[in-house]
Length: 225
Ligand code: ADP
Ligand code: MG
Image (cartoon, rainbow, N blue to C red; front, side, top):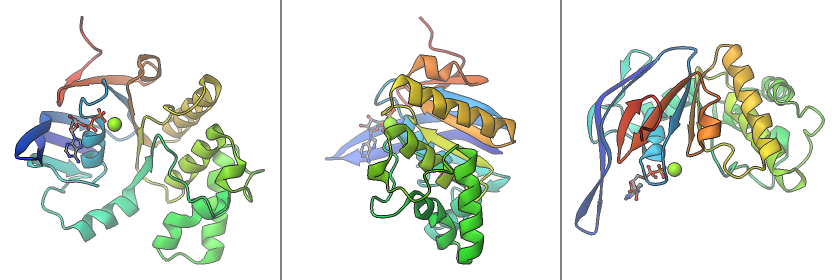
């Protein structure tokens, strides 16, 4: 599904260079459920942005579904994302003036699907996250856990091969967090590749494969020491 070799990402801030990723090698196969665990500032979001083709490496190679993405234009990256990648963020990032159904339809609007196709797919995605009875609610009328489930429905409505979740349980109470993890596990069972990013060891433990990142360096297995 994806392969990174020697990926670095540096940021220049006020004349200084911050090395957010420092030679990352990573392969993820189709259907895997991988957790990437690390402390705040370790490079998790930078890694997810590159994995998700939101950002490009400063150096190194990144192949996604067999295709080198390092040299793609922003437009090419956007179309690859639209076809193959779904995102879930800590802060849900729903549009507050739209209903759950409309939020979930959004990726299909961007793709130019007809309203009939959009509606059917969005209803099915909301059913998969157990929210078929909340389709007309706006985000402000939903609990945090329900909002995150809407965000997951939005992430899967276009049937991506890869789902990237950056601290998806970070703003949730234990019970809603557990609901979200169960939904991710169901998606893995249905064949979606899931990469879960977290600073929470208990959350990382749920994944079938664990990676640990510190100072922009990635290692297989859990934190040592
Ligand atoms: P995490 O998600 O693990 O908290 P990040 O990937 O957000 O870590 O950040 C890794 C490092 O890169 C941090 O030292 C952070 O300050 C720095 N960093 C992240 N984004 C930027 C940016 N846009 N500009 C400058 N430095 C950044
Ligand atoms: Mg982060």
